[in-house]
Length: 113
Length: 116
Image (cartoon, rainbow over all chains, first blue to last red; front, side, top):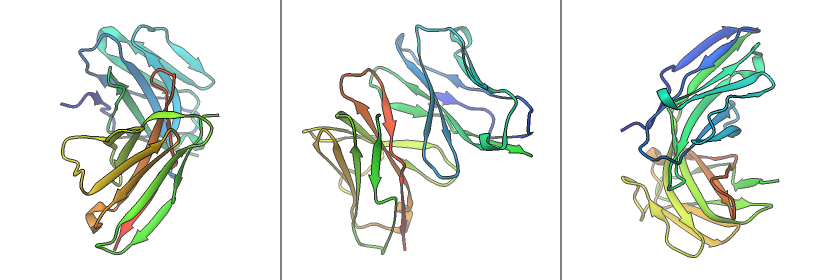
């Protein structure tokens, strides 16, 4: 069964628009971790955020923000005022008690100038 | 800090030959390393978990005799693709779990393997 679902396959926006990437996860563990990674065309994964299951506080880092809602098992990611350099594939991932990462299918974000 | 390197970054080999990929944690020790495979336009799929000094644990469907993993030290894990075939062509990515931390995986830049 898919543990992490990223329903949006591709999103295309014009520069300066906001874009929200959805992530829904499934787990029976009470302790787990959620991650977001960015994968630009070069292929190297760039770590964006890690959140443990006991910390539901939303987080903002520059133009990036994350909304963690345990009630709906979602961990959504918003890029505010998008830029061309934000074009990449974004992966949401879940780590349970065995610390293995289960990745979602990824969302390709294209930001047009 | 927390840099992971992979070597080579890309490799082309002929069908039937073996290829070794190295994964090194440069500035920290890693008790556990993970190997992932990513096909074009697809997600990362975990292949195996490698623990220093012990046998790797393979995910279901991954042939352990084909993908040999050795984790000889706290800073080095190797993946050998034996008797490679064109269908093994993929992007292989390793990650290292920093010793003493909880769930901090650092990813290498990946190795692109093309088997002709």
